[in-house]
Image (cartoon, helix red, strand yellow):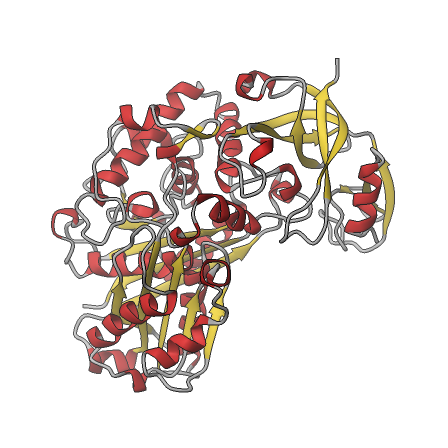
Length: 133
Length: 391
């Protein structure tokens, strides 16, 4: 069992935690109560590398309420070396300069914290990726 | 299981911010549907109402109970469906199941939303609540953001130059506005050009303003009746021949399929199998074009075109009236508008009007079988309905 709270606290320490299924070996992240592949319930908490490859991205110019100061910002979906995809932001490139050229590039994980708003029941850390080289 | 027919439909004009409440809007659509069915409010045995954000837009929780009372269907059971943008379709599917099972004979399904009332920042925030609040929202995800990422993924997967794909996507929007301009109930009744789309401001790269549907206020309702009752009420019943629904986890959990939406493919297959039909049998489809790219993905997921081929089909005009499959002759979410909790049964409204041959310049000649496709969130809910002329 890996709760959001424990996952979030670890991410704030730059540690990306996931779950490894003892039945099929699949890594599940973000955490769930069962394996994302086989729905098995015997899962070990493991620390992941935080490294991977950008699969896709967007630059957000029209943000949600209370996120105005962050825009424009880049959101990426990264395939981790361990298999799962994870959503985060990207630094190291001007947001309005990002093109499809960044897809396939290798990245490593840091983090930043969304402080939360009146709806979010507290803060939430998210991966902040940067180019590996 | 009994056969179930749509015997009456109603829909308000879709619009930007307006003074009417979500309950008042629902009442308008519901009374139209009830009157058209030659029924009285007291004949309605239960209400199934889609509504997503009444609490945020008006401070109104459980509008379904007040809606039942407002229309004079006193004290009947009334349930709200919250399946993001597919809420009203989920309501309609459940309403169908209850009538098909024999528990009820006549029910009302519909939806209402006052999304435009919230304004863009709050609407963008609350719509994003349809994504994963813990593992996606901290990164600042928005709904245009989801389909922007799927656009890049699609272009790469199919080795398609982004500029070419974007021009084809822009044609999705110009088509929708062309039909919207002919629809007196549409939110945006104006033609737009390719130039307008490609020069509108950037929302989430690569999606520009005119790749996106508007935030709308509006409501819709349909009356469902058992076959036996339907025959007594109308000589033009529209039968629900097939239904499908599926769910999915957050976008990340769908990684093995993206940019395909697996829940749609599962839902559509249920509907086709139940109806004993295939994509080639569908004359007209109202599908979930919340973004231009969403149309391309839906056209393929519903089986109308091969994967990687839908954008070219749009360019060849195959999704226009008279093409291989008439898509969104109502103007779709893009031009007719998208009051999210009302969208699903508004799609049914348009299909029923098409099957009855009442759409004037937007009419798909001889349409006998129609389909709806409604997406909630980024695949979290998909509902498909197949409707068939009963005369």
